[in-house]
Length: 285
Length: 285
Image (cartoon, rainbow over all chains, first blue to last red; front, side, top):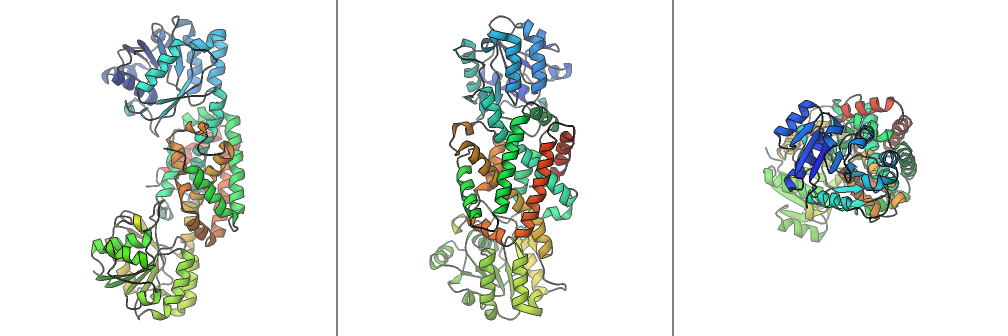
């Protein structure tokens, strides 16, 4: 199985790791990168890409599979830019954190052909660091990679993409773009907001992380603050592309937290704790 | 340095680990345990204790240092029970998660002698599992152990206790009982409530942890749900002994989260994320 010629646009943590992973799995005959000149050079030195261009249209032109590995808004802009350059039969995909905005743009750009030409994706992998310097072939191993088809009907290139994703160790889960964004608001965006709001609350209370009182904490605090270290620019884009779902998830959480607070001194508290523990048991890491 | 004869009342994860740690560090000439008969036998087999009694007063009677390793309410009841049996100069301490209720009870029981006879403590160590079966000599290594003196003035036995704690690898931090409970409400109890309320919110939205949609999540979710697996009985006791501080911390968090939600679509959002990241940087694991 081979994807033949692959183009990876955006050589940060996600794109760089993808190039290394495809290379390691031997599922691409050629990998063409797109990014700033210095990044292209670095990626060549790392053996991540075979060729490259600073122009997205040029980089994508001769490729069979094109991965947009940039933040959502940038990927939408680049999709519009490279659409006229794609060769017939080429499949375009992305790794954006939300899918509805990208899916809508794909339908606008490709019309009736959208389902065949674009298969939006979202690998649920990443770290609190970014950049090509942190790229690793193992980034996607063991993770879930969501694909959100724009229509029904089998497309040969979709199957090839799925096989390539599995070859780099990820597990494909299919979902509609809307279902994806609604689910992620709860399973990813909400947890992020809680970690950030926890850090904000502590900053309000203790002034700064170096306050001596902040020594008095156990490992659980560090755990709950881990996500607060995430990239603000990335989250600004995620939030901008999924605001209603995130607001709804936050409001629902606010209601549950208020109920928990109001039950602090009654028997309901224990029942809630037990239900929460039962639920958490099934969420695998 | 030796604590001479040590009594450990309560042979669960905390007490069992403490016995093993003191043994390994060689800072006790004899360790007397107190717990149910089956636990005493198991602890003897593990080499954690030299002798034992199911009666707290009997176990403590001849010892120089007595550690109450039971939940807060139980420790208060046992302190009252063993007080008449303690030998002169013996020091009583505990490992309870909150300190004000225990400190107040100590002052009631020992009056003017409280500062000399009791030095409340709280090792910020633990796991999501409990019981002697999980006890390990390394539990306290690298953790913070808070001591909350009930008065001022040097007491020789206090210094010995501190040295023993350091000998098992923990770092002693001094704080007043009130400061301890207020701080912990933010650094431990609040994070716990957030993890539990997150699980409750997801249970509301997805019905159960086995819902297929729940496959669509990244590692961050598991991180944020880790604390939700904690023991409900233990948390019932913690909450019962620190309700005002916890309610205040929750209300403050609710305010910050609401502000974050209201800023989703404006520039304030990015600034909040950056501040939160800056704060979280200084919180070491």
